[in-house]
Length: 447
Ligand code: HAM
Image (cartoon, rainbow, N blue to C red; front, side, top):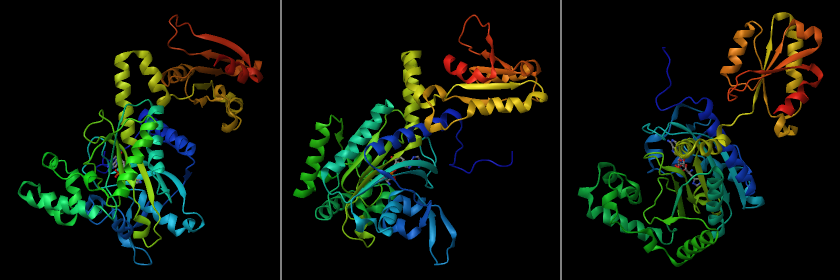
């Protein structure tokens, strides 16, 4: 074929698409449980916004943004969003919501774009489910987000690790930055090429370099440089999450690749997804609103990488399958379970009108009011296929019922309802005559 996917971009089908969708659905329900409100922001923002927020020296701004050659009427150049936080901060300020009440609690879900080197768990288009809370300086809010992430993790049935750190604030971070800079200068001969270039502009980035990780083990730790306020804040966060029963470890070398973080920063990691192991990450950004010309309103948030979370689910499912079929089934069903399929087989074109009516009768109602037993799928097969071919098709897609409807059934006002259950050993299909008006009831009873 002439056309293929663009490098680093992916198609997603079937179970893979379902897992991502269901993780998003779980995250959405948990976010609503924590009184967060959905915000939708554009997929493009001005390049300048990312420069001012994500940071000039971040990898994202330096080399990963997809930008456009054209400019808009005002001369602005734009980029596909590489992350959600800058757009949410902009929208928060532009809407004037902060004037009504600085405390606003948002969640969002959508695609992000980064020109990274593609590998397992790292794509050029990926989905984030993010949370951003403004107007809360207190440590209880940091703890609340870590607890939310842990609630979601437990609900998904995953084993993950949480690492936290404090990066200090504008009062104490400069001293830490200088300490890392001096450490870097003293070891500049041992640094990788990238780090040597970063050293003077953004020394803290050295700490999350994979190549220099060994050397950086001896680097200064941010926690030793915290001012009293930052220390107290970090202590309170820990006290609160300990009390909530959250397991975590303090990683004094955790810094984030984005420039806006202050105080608490955290990552949720999976040991089962390969080298791209952060399934969620975030932290506080108390100076960001002000940096964009707004009042000094604090902020904090995180984003979950939905595809990476899906990888963690795949490998957890794999482990369960080694335990037992039942353990696998119980774990995996909630991510890929789909409602049972009822296939309708119109035999010959003369029954098409009534077959359509039967399909519509089975489909009717409003999804909001459907009871669990009414959540089935109705597939009207093509009358251009023979009954045998329809039967094979229904079997292949795993339909639970086949409603056979031909001339004879039409004249008698009935259908033949066949149960197709490949798990039944005697493989004699159960088939019964059902009057059309009682078909819905009959199926509900059998489900
Ligand atoms: P981030 O660490 O750049 O933070 O991304 C958050 C998560 O998105 C990562 O932990 C990962 O799961 C996923 N992710 C990032 N890049 C990729 C990629 N190329 N392919 C697949 N998944 C990826 C942020 O974006 C911040 N905006 C988070 C935040 C919100 N901080 C405060 N509020």
